[in-house]
Image (cartoon, rainbow, N blue to C red; front, side):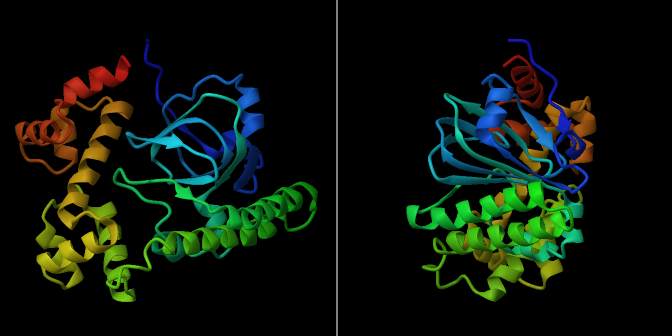
Length: 294
């Protein structure tokens, strides 16, 4: 099948873009596209898929998840994703921009502290217990009501409801982590700042020791702390981040392998090629060719 160009969808292509917030029923979106399978794409805004009923698959940064009832997906700006549905779903698509968060005093710390919008190839859906579904339905009903009927301050109303939605989701997510006695404010702080550093410096250094030094801890402590929360060591996160960024660049850019290797902080393209093949089983050229012809 001929590969279609993978595009970055800007928020201006969404409804209510002047608010930096949009809400759409999944069934309406499905009908408007005549049920055609989604194509891989990225957004420059946050996306939440709240699926009450559905069957199919959802790929986020090259990891495929089976769609199930009563699940929520959280997608960061820049993450590649693709939804393939087997039948008409029931649910909601919630989208909002970074500017929307700022305008509504929703701090960046909240987004980073909660483990909902993840990266580095780990963005699993959040299952919602049946007893919690009325809470979510009520929040979404209010979002729909206020953004469609209020003449004054609809953005502020939506902002308050999004904040409640995220807090409710974080509380549900936290239920899966409360059994871990090592999950303390200190470990949260270290993980949060490690991820911030990694987002900024993944191309500058690939060494755990450099991140540990920046956080004033030992490499061993950083590895163990990160693993106690995420199940992956700091080294694993660094490598996953590099692989994800490499895959994105291979799909979205025209960089040569040598240029890509240099942009990711590899001094030798051969080293990058070996690293990529060890992680994926394919050379960068093979991955690009396969992706563009799939």
